[in-house]
Image (cartoon, rainbow, N blue to C red; front, side, top):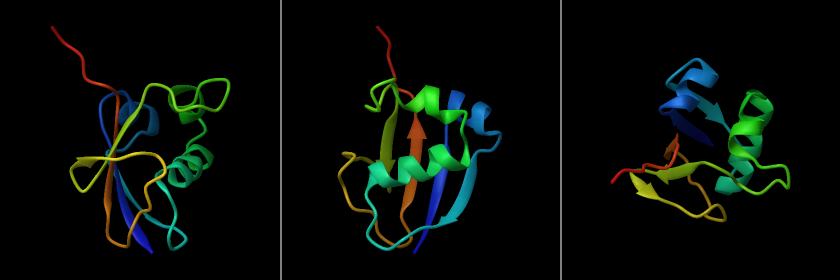
Length: 88
């Protein structure tokens, strides 16, 4: 199945692009996609994953809605990867 992955803020700088299309196995989860992205872009390993392989400083949305890492992706989804937003 085909997904569009969009990178925002520091992830865009680290990866060197704002968007890419990927062919991935049918029925993968967000967590499995993150593993694929980590393999494609090793620089994300220290930015997305903490030392204990827990997801660190990253938010993920699917088609404009925040998702959990165990959520299953579908063909044609647009997945956005971005850092948490803070302010005050």
